[in-house]
Structures are given as C-alpha cells and as structure tokens.
Length: 471
View (cartoon, rainbow, N blue to C red):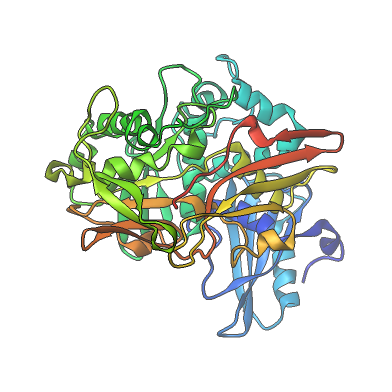
C-alpha cells in the first residue's frame, strides 16, 4: 500500500498532458486495447504515470515514468491487472518514488545536451521568441518534451535548433510526434536517413529535408511573403522548381543504396520554409511536380469540376521536367511525405491543449476547411477558440499532430509504403489515371493562422503562418 503521505504528492493531470510525456515511450501513448483512465504527476513533472483500463478484461494497470538526470523519461514500472483503479493507484504511488532523485543514465549512455541552454554560436530570433515570451510558453513545453523523446539526436541538433537551422530541426521534432502518436516504433540507429519507422512488420526509412532559399534565415520571423498572383506561376513556376531542386538534391545522395536501407521502403519528408508565409500557399505546387499534373477547373456553375492537366515541364526559368514519379529511375523513392504544420503555432496549440496555459493567454485559430460535399470546390471558413468544445469536436480525439501530414505515393515505387503504416496521414495515390486521396479525418484544414493573445497584448503566433494541407 502507498504510504499516508503518498496521495498528497500525486497530482492529477489531463490525458493530453500525459500523452505529451508519453511520446517518449517506444510506441508513444498507444495502449490498445486499453486506454488512459486517469493520469498523474508529482512535483513539477519529475515523475508521471497513468492508470490504464482494459474494457475487454474490465481490469486496470498502472504505468510509471521517471525522469533521468538528463531529464529524459524512462519507464520504471508497469503492473497489473488490478480489479479497481484505487488498487492500481496505490501501486503507482509506490512506483513513482516521488521523493527520490532522478534516475541515473543507463551504462554507456551519454548525457543529452540541454536544448534550451544557449551555446557559443548564439541564438536566432525564433529561438529567442520561444524562450522569452509567455505567449509561447506552451510551445516551449511541447518542443522540450519532443526533444527528450528523440531516440538519438545527432551532435549538431541543439546548436542547429538554437540558430539558423531552427526550422529544419523543428520539422524533425514534428515528424517524431506524428509517428509516435500513431503507434510507430521510431529508431535513429544510423546517421542517415533520419528515421526508421516500424509497425506490425512494415518499415520505412525517412530522410527529412526542408525547402529553403539561399538566405541563411529563410522562413523565419520576418515580413510575410504572399503567394504569386498568377495561378500558373504558383502551381508550376518558382515554388514547384524549388521543390524539384530540393528533392533532386537529396536523391543524389543515393540513400537507397546504403546497406541498411537497400530493399526497403524509403521516403523523403519535405517541409517548405523558403520564406515567411510560403508554407501557407506553396503546397499545391508539390503534387503538380510529383505527378506532372496541374489541377485545373473546367465547366460552369453546377458543372464545375477539378481535372488534372498533364504537363511536361515546369514553367520556371530552368524548365525542369515535371513528373518526378513518372521517372522509372526514381522507383526507389516510395513516397514524399509533406506537411506545413511544423510551426511554432502547431507546437503552441498542442502544448496549450496539453494544459500549459499561462494566465491571460487565449488562442484563436482561423482558416478554411476542406468541404467534402460531392462537387464542392470552395472551402469552409472557420474561426474558433482552441480551448472551445467546438474546436475539439472538429476531430474525434481533438487536434492531433498528424492531421496535416500527407503522403504522396509513387505509383512506380519498387517498395510501396502500406497505408496502414501511417494511418493518420492523408494519402495521395494514382488510380486509373486519376490522383485520389484517402484520409480518416472528416475535417481537414486547408490553411490557418493561430492568433495568440495575452491580456493587454495581441499577436499572431510565431509571427508566421500555420498549416496548408490539400484541397
């Protein structure tokens, strides 16, 4: 039994709060067929745990996590089954060892560098914004937990994150959260590619890459860059060429020929940070380049419909061939994974929803949703408080990390990626000459901006745009 003092040391926390901590578990906060019945922490989060309920067996189990001296979480106990939640809570109280110092590192393990302690290379404005504003405190907490959940960050991760590669490293943290959220085992046992994901025997190697301009701080805090007014330029011009150069440059490294990758699925994960604001509007150029099809509208009134117009080349100044996925020599590329949600705004919302809510902070997310009504070509406007029941009800489990994740499948892939490996993503694929999509989400955000407001202060979260996902 727990000592009389134990219950007073344990504080209930929300399910979402614990799920953020649980991103450090091998398969994230996924306990099927059980689900989280209640969750707890001690002190300021030096230990945490939950009670799981298995509806099939009508039993409870306890799961305890403790911080190591480098602040990473380690699972220290999983016990049960118990017939009552109180019995499981008694066990949890003992296993948490609330008064004990942090756990030591495993033998031979190196202490993880502190993410938020500035180094000799200085800091970027994005890092400073994260560190110095109360309005971004939720993002700070979410980013910190995702960093601690990385299996094996490389030696340059911390200095890169603090300086001009802030966006690229934030994208890696976002990908980890997406994968762990979906129950994937994520490994970083090799220098490259960045991740190996695995579930139920299916695997895929993933290398993350960002589309940047030639300026060292592209895509950071700065003046908003709007989309080209000319639609053809937006679809097949400069934005498409930038994606083409980025992807082709990575493919020249021949990851598929590495001994640990050969014969397995391989994908490039792509985000666009080439200008402040580009992530809102550049996405539609990507499938144009990948499939060599430009999305056009034909017909009038009720007869209007979207059609794919084949194109041979992009219209930028270099005339790059369109249709990367049409090239048989690229069959080793299983897919391109894309998201425009690797932003401070996304991490700020997820930290806010997990319970880090400084007094006086409110968040309003406004944007457009994909209208799934047959024949509809115009989106649906929305503007909702992130804390509202209406916002939570947009999705069965509230906002998730992976809702803006897209997988563009190569129809010629030698080693295709099973849809079930990344079930929470929107999947794009070719069938009978048409490009179709499949998703589990009834509401998909096409683009949005998150406005944060402190009492007496208003601003747009991270002074940059948020997600842009498919129409």
